[in-house]
Length: 57
Length: 402
Ligand SMILES: Cc1cc2nc3c(=O)[nH]c(=O)nc-3n(C[C@H](O)[C@H](O)[C@H](O)COP(=O)(O)OP(=O)(O)OC[C@H]3O[C@@H](n4cnc5c(N)ncnc54)[C@H](O)[C@@H]3O)c2cc1C
Ligand code: SF4
Ligand code: SF4
Image (cartoon, rainbow over all chains, first blue to last red; front, side):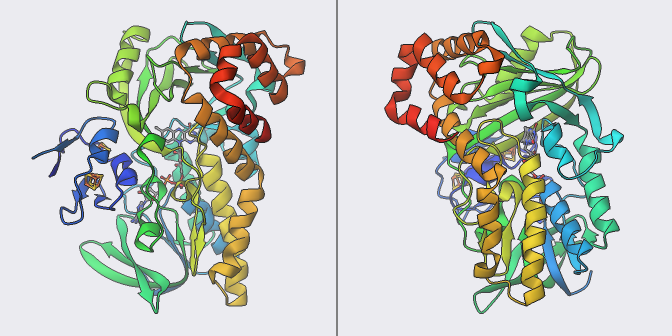
């Protein structure tokens, strides 16, 4: 499970571009995760310039 | 908002704005849809653009220009500073813009030419009919609207979801996603007419730190690092904070900007039936510099010109839109992207010793001899080890790409 720390995220879209499944989307000023398509690859967690994403077991 | 247009443009950055303007000027009905409530904010840019490149499109308005730049400095990992005067810095010198104003003015121009603009209106999926794109479903104020269009322009920037929904893979490989953080700082001691670039694996692995002045004592101070080098404690924001702490301890931060630039190769094809992809969405930002303003304007305008011909003929099939793809690839832009991709592939592999050696030897070169072949000869003679590292293939790539 990927968790977005909204208090850290500055909705830049970096994570959206690397997600191989298209599971992320920026809806105006918040990031939406489609948990049904996410494969927990963790690429989005790696790329975030602020560290706003966390992979949770 | 009407239910049908000739052209639907998804995204209100420079690419979308210029495409909308071009179509509208030719008399087509255009809807430009932007998901953010305001054009151009938050800024996702260091705002540097080459003078000559910008002049290709218009005479810039004074209010767009934050600073005029006449030289660029490159700072090696060992602290050695190489000055690039205009002749050598090429398109890297020019203007530092106010993108908030610039982007909005471009939309203004598109609206002035007759395009309709909707903000806080997000494309949520393409409208498909018999396997072909026929517009999009837009969400505005919690309501969905079906908007039909003969031609749709995907100008949705680095996120590039629209093309993905149309079945085109736009995923950027992690290592080719330059992940960035930037502060707009004031109260700092800088040369207001020089840009500075710091390279090295301590300051910015797989990328660089930039200082782009925006007037006296004010500048965009930012950093981009390769996505694969980004780790907890060593994210762009961490590198930036360390840099700022040591270079501008008394500076004041008045804005935080984060974002990503793709430094991969362009999409293998930037058209489909009734669809054209422009700007960052087409992955045409420069893989070496990360610059994408020019590319967005260029592809936006070209899409307008080629797309209009298709509309006129009543044929917007991918075959008929293909001249767009072909033209930009063969243009100055396409060639620069190809060349800079090869250089970038070498650049990201260099360690600090290599970088020091290269920058020192380039600085020694006589300006009148400054061309790529000479540059490479110089690198080889001065630093055989670097040459070995690049390998025959690397060097050949580098030479071929010029
Ligand atoms: C930190 C950083 C520094 C940079 N520095 C420079 C620089 O110094 N010089 C330079 O030339 N370039 C620079 N760039 C790159 C430059 O900002 C981009 O290349 C440029 O903005 C691309 O323009 P565009 O029109 O393609 O996309 P954008 O300007 O990104 O516009 C895309 C628009 O589409 C909207 N959108 C997305 N999805 C949807 C949807 N589904 N529905 C409706 N709207 C949507 C977005 O909200 C956005 O407004 C930098 C980028 C970053 C991140
Ligand atoms: S990369 Fe980080 S800051 Fe940017 S949108 Fe994703 S979670 Fe937010
Ligand atoms: S973990 Fe992978 S699949 Fe899931 S949202 Fe992040 S990048 Fe996408």
